[in-house]
Length: 154
Image 1 (cartoon, rainbow, N blue to C red):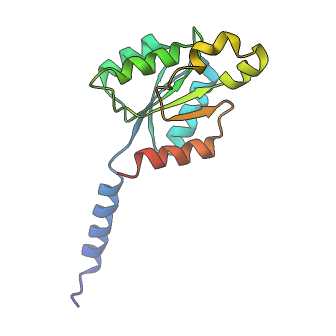
Image 2 (cartoon, rainbow, N blue to C red; image 1 turned 30 degrees about the horizontal axis):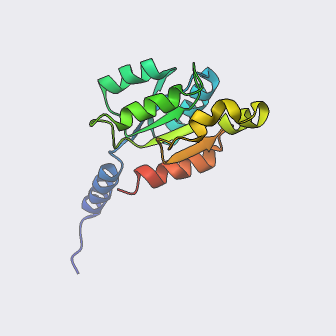
Image 3 (cartoon, one colour; image 1 turned 120 degrees about the vertical axis):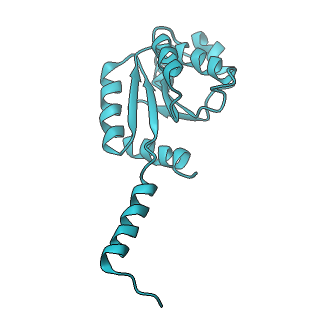
């Protein structure tokens, strides 16, 4: 067994810790509701994520043009009932963004319950462009667990 001086062992542990924590995942949050954007930003940053914000699909595309995030959290309904869907479908057809993980947020099911399914048939009959869906209000514990599962399993 080889013994290291105390300072050397401490230095190696620090180096390992620093390299393990160098990757800060970046998440783009797209929602027209400022309260949702702000609360998600607080929760995500408190848990070590870098966060960028957009209030609609147009701003999201501008943000995506500056730098591709590691993941996008995207509201389904913004200025239209399908703005989030439309953006997600568009991204899935763009080579640079086709593999971007997208978590969709919605109060869609509540709206369907309130207004009936007829006006939403065009959405209900479509294949959804994201693998993950969280209904509002968002359970932050479940969201963080899902983010860890998606991003931190590399």
